Figure 1 (spheres, helix red, strand yellow):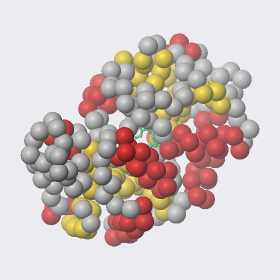
Figure 2 (tube, protein in one colour):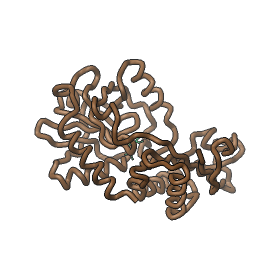
Figure 3 (cartoon, rainbow, N blue to C red):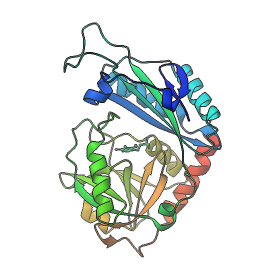
Figure 4 (cartoon, rainbow, N blue to C red):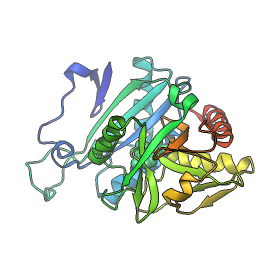
Length: 283
Ligand code: PLP
C-alpha cells in the first residue's frame, strides 16, 4: 500500500512519524474517515467541514487546503486502486519535546492518510442486523470533536465481542448517547425516527446529516430528542449510521429482541435510499 505523510506518497514500510509526535504521546490529534464507493468519495465536503471544526476547537493549525486534501484523497484511492473502502485521515498537533503545554513557538501539524479496502454495500451485519449491549458513557464531554482518543470505544467493542454481541450503545444519565463508533436511532410504533439532538455529548455524524435529508425527502418524520434504554427496547426497530456502515439495522438490545428480531422495514428502506443518494452525490 501507498500511504500519505506530510505531502509525500510513500510505501507504508517507509512512512515515518516521530516518537515525539503529540498525536502519539497525548492523543493530541483529530481524524476523519471518508468512504469510497464506485471509486468516488462520499460526502467529502461534509467530512472536511467537520475536520476544520475539530481543528478549530482544539486550536490546531490546518495542514492543507480543501483542494489539496481532495487531490490527495483522489490520488491515494487511485494509486491503491480502491473502488470500495475508505480513506482514513489524521492530523496531529505535530512534533514537540514532551510537555503538557503546547510549545509557544507552535508546531507543524502532522498529516497522514491511508486507504482500506472494505466491502460496504454487502455484509452479514446488514442482513442479520446488529445485537447491541449498553454501557455507561464515561467519555470526556467533548464527544463533538472527532479526536483519536478511542480507547474507551475500543474497550467497549472488545467487551461486546466477549459478550457475544456486535456493538455497544452508550448511556448518559439514563439516555442513549450514541454507539461506540456510530449514531443511534430508534423507530417508534408510528414509524417516526428518533435520534439524540446534536450537542457536545455526541459526534455530529456526516451520515446522520445525510440520512435526515433522505428521511425528509421521503416524508419519514424525525424526532430529534433523547431516548431511554427502556424506550429503545420497546421500539419497533432500531439502527445505527456511520460513514463505513452507512445504515445498519439493530435487532437486539441487552438481550431483548426488537419486533420479530429481524432487520426492520424502515431501516432497510433508509439504507437503500441512503446508498442511492450517496452514489449520486459522490465526487
Ligand atoms: N459517533 C461516533 C462516536 C463515531 O466514532 C462515528 C464515526 O466514526 C459516528 C458517530 C458516525 O459519524 P459519521 O457518520 O460521520 O461516520
